[in-house]
Length: 98
Image (cartoon, rainbow, N blue to C red; front, side, top):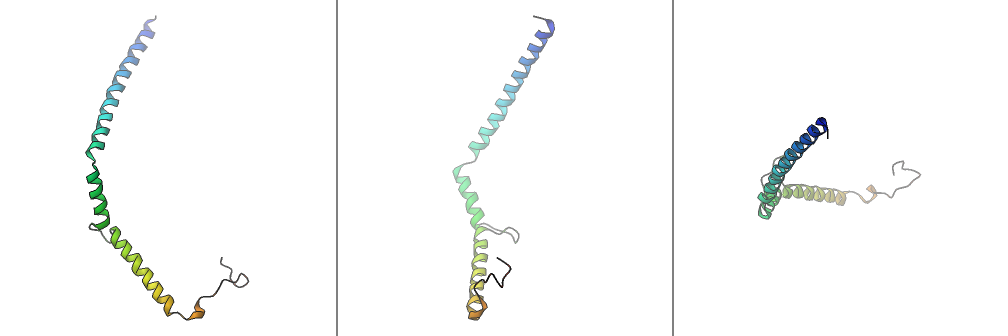
């Protein structure tokens, strides 16, 4: 075995050892982060997202549902107030939009 081959083998062993150590540390961090996140914490985050304090740009889920419901009710009231002829069936000879 040549000197260069022995040096390369030693360097490879050093790299393997460092890689194993790095993988161990990163794996331990991942396990710790997964075990730190509990089912209870997941439930709390979900409840906060649904019922929690929202902002005007990011309202909570209940506020968004209320906005959609109010908008649908408003549109239904407009449709009911419209004359019957306001809504016609599509006629491909008259309408270019499909």
